[in-house]
Amino acid sequence: MRDEDKPFVCYKRGWNIKIVPRGGAGWRAFGAWMAAFGIMLAGFLAIMATLGDSSIGIAVTAVFVVISIVWAVVMIRWMMARSEIVDLDEMLDLKRRNEGRRP
Image 1 (cartoon, rainbow, N blue to C red):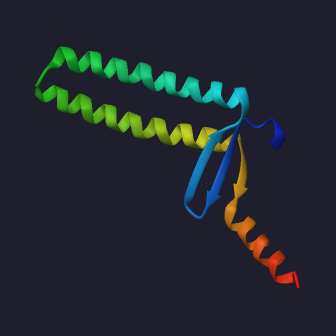
Image 2: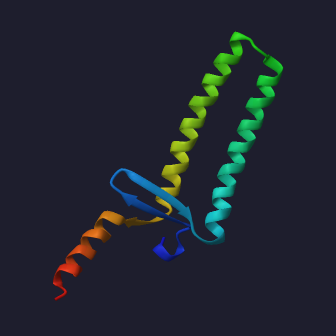
Image 3: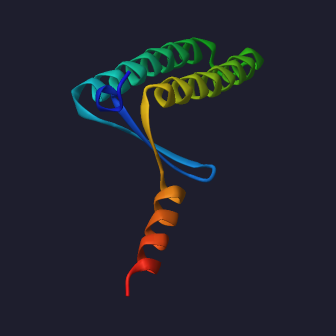
């Protein structure tokens, strides 16, 4: 996939990353991921409404948290694979080198 066709841009600086949707395709893909999470959240809320304050509710909450973490990691990896990567550290180094050459 060419960088121009990628639906996301990933800005990296060390361990920090910021993934931004680019164009309609990026926003639709992001919306699909959020809709899937919304469905999962609605299911969790429906289950919790029927359970009330039981010990099973604690287990269901723990399972939901684990699934949410796994879901987030998978989403980030999926988006990064479809992102144009912009390394900000590399760009800053290039800027510093270019500024050093100017009289």
